[in-house]
Structures are given as structure tokens and as C-alpha cells.
Length: 163
Image (cartoon, rainbow, N blue to C red; front, top):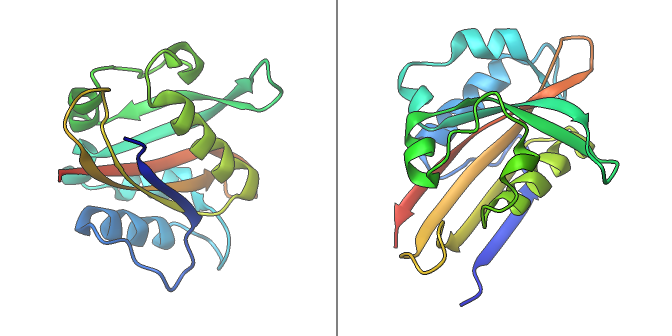
């Protein structure tokens, strides 16, 4: 069964469905120095709540990959994310995890956010592991910067509910 997957930029007037994603988006918006800009990484990081640490992930911009596109290094991958996906990529380049069935899609999402510097929402009805039960997935991927307009990474959260 092919999964139903959507990836769209998120406008200021749109709201994610999951409460944790709404909270993260609000914190991200509060960390922006001006309308339409990226949140400042240091401001956002200081505002994250302990509860958010279960479901968030934070990818720093890494070296340019062999395909000429940006690479990413995992700064943080919450305990729930590590359990769900069965990996612990903290401190590692994501390119090393391409054998994981979902990682190519994850990298494509991160690159879309890096290219546009816009927040994105993605949804899917999919199985994390082939042959496993289907899940309803909703996630945000939000650009973060240094306060001078330079992208430094992408932070987000993924909420997974059984169908």
C-alpha cells in the first residue's frame, strides 16, 4: 500500500492539529526577530519545555552532500523519536542512515525547508517500518538561524498516532 504523504509550507494563519506541534510552532514564532524571518536558534532552544523534548528533533546544517545539496547533523533526537524509529542519530550526519526506509524522505523534507527557509507541515498515513502497522503522522519542520539571516538548521517535532 502506498502511503498518502503531503508536504506543504505552513502559512502564519494555518494551525497544526496536534497540541505539541501547535506549542512548538508558537515557541518558534516567539523566537523570530521579525515577521517572516527564521527563529533564532538560541532563543528557541532556551524556550523549549521539558515535555517538548520527548518529541522534538533538531538538525544542524552540515557539510554539502555529494549530490551538492545541504547535509544535516543531528543535534537532538527526542527519546520518543529514538524509540519510534529505532535509531539514535545524535551527533551524526543523517546521510549515514539512508538505509533506513524513511530517511531519504526526511532528508528531502529538511532540504525543502533549507531551500525555502519556510516552515513546513507534513502528514502521512504510513508505516515507520515496512510491514508494521500504519500510523497517522503529523510533523513540523521549522527553519532556525543565527539572528543575522543565515540558516543554521531545522527543528521540528513528529507526532505519530496508530490508525
